[in-house]
Image (cartoon, rainbow, N blue to C red; front, side):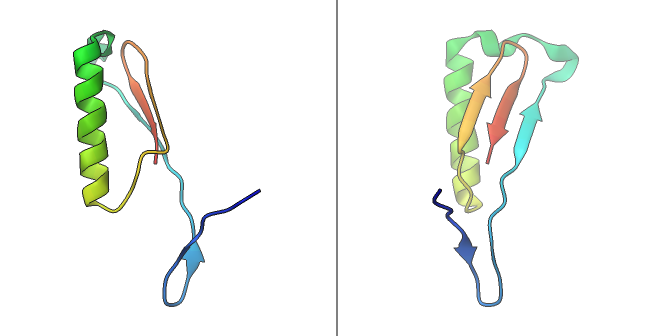
Length: 68
C-alpha cells in the first residue's frame, strides 16, 4: 500500500477530511445536473487556492459529501 505523506521542515503527515454539506431545510437542489457541475467546479477552485484537493465527491439529491 502506497502512502503519500506531505513533509515539512519538522513534520510529516497526511490528513483526510470527510465533509457533508446540507442546504437549509434540506432543499433538493442537487437533483439538477447544472448545480452539481457548478458546485463541483467551485469546490475544486476554492480548495486548490487553499492547497487542498478533492479525493472524492458524491452528490445526493439533498446533500453533498466531500473527502479532501
